[in-house]
Image 1 (cartoon, one colour):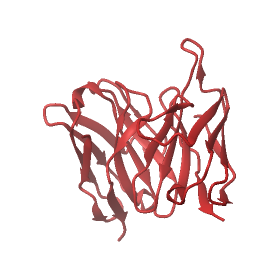
Image 2 (image 1 turned 120 degrees about the vertical axis):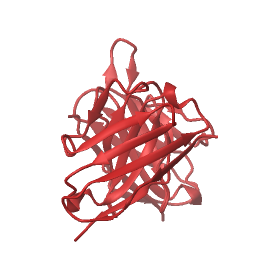
Image 3 (image 1 turned 60 degrees about the vertical axis):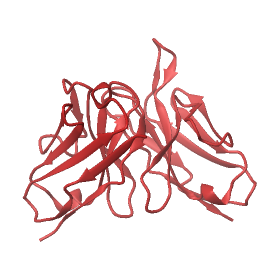
Image 4 (image 1 turned 90 degrees about the vertical axis):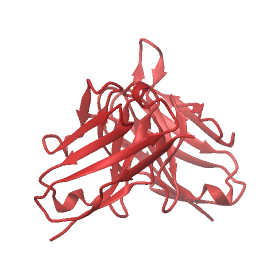
Length: 120
Length: 113
C-alpha cells in the first residue's frame, strides 16, 4: 500500500533553514508528481509546491516562491523541501502528497505530516 | 491565481439527513480540450491528514461511500452527503488543479445537529 512518511520538522529560529524529507513506498515513485501542502495550527490547507515525476517541472505558491525549493531523488524514492529564511507564519504541519498523475492533478495519498515551529 | 471560496463556513445536520457544501472558483476550471473540471474534494478529520473523496468534480475515489457525490461545472461545484453518518463529521475542502497552482478552498466544517 502507498506510504508517505515525512521527517525533518522541529523548532527552528526565525531566519534559519530546514530540510524536510518524505520517504515514499508502495508505488512507482518515479512515475508520479509530488506535492507539499501545509496547514498552520487551526487553519486550512495551503498548497506549497509541486514537482513533476522526473523533476523537470517545479511550481510554487507565491507565499513561498524564492524561499522554498522542492526536489526529489527517484533513486531513493524520496521527496524534499528545502526551506530558507523561515518566518513565524511558516509554522505549520507540512504534508507530502502524491499526485494522481505525472504532475498537476489531484492529491490521492497524503502522509501524516511533520510539524515545523518557527520561534525564537 | 484562482481563488476558491466555500459556503457555508460550517453546518450542522441531523443523522441521516442531507448535507450540501458549495465551492466556487474565481475562474473556470473546465478544460475545454478534454471537457474535464479540474476540481477535487477532500475530507479531513481531527488529527488526521486529508483524504481524497472526489476528483474531476464528480468521480468518487475508490473506497469512498456512495453517499458522497460531487457535481457542478465551470466555476460552481457542490459536494453532497446524501445521508449524514456520525463518521462524516469533518472539515471538507475543495481544491482546483487547473494550471500550475493548486489552491484550496477555506474549508467547511460539518457537525451533527
